Length: 251
Image (cartoon, rainbow, N blue to C red; front, side, top):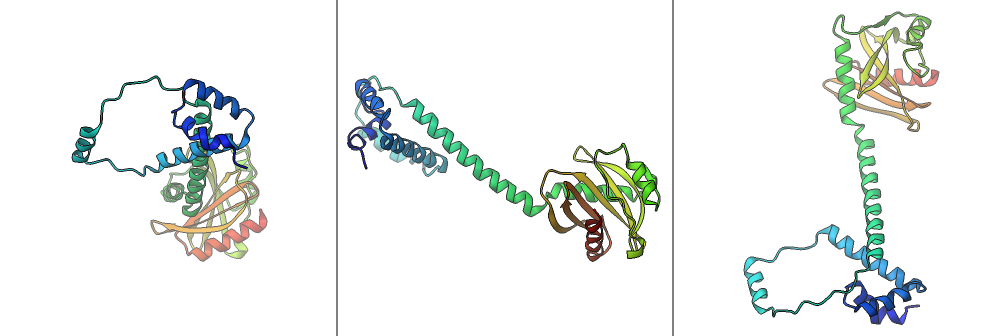
């Protein structure tokens, strides 16, 4: 049910057109009138939304001169106090809404593009590992030797498995630094081509495999058990997807 004050005083109060006594009277009314308080918040939200939308256009210089020529001098009067509380409340609500929208948009972009910069760093790390003598790690086809080398170097359990019978021979492992964090790397070989599987901890939920390519290298990324994996190589993408299935079933 609409309050009688809404028609007579609310708009004037919102625009700051009431006298000090009128503003005080209307504020006392707001203390026990929910519909008026709600409508005042709606007005503030509408006002702030229109400002954020920037739906305006500057008047041309000629139009400004015409308007100024027709204006009459106005004797300044003391303005009634503005309803600061409701303005702050509405502004906070509008900012919260904008923040939620921006967060959802940015989150969607990150998921769709798989963090292009991170993919680029992983490919570059893979290319560096191909240079002779560049990587310090362990070279072994023994699961226990490779796993033992990682013990104490990372704070999570690495699923070290040799899949030589399936065509993916374990060749060793090393550590790398990606985006300021320590990343474990398992090295496999498929038809003479090295494959680096980067592994790091994550708080994100499990995901199915996502694929992509950069600089003629293929990558397959997935998450499982609070770990994120990314296999990188110049081998066929189907080989990386097969290795993903083998690791995923053993992790």
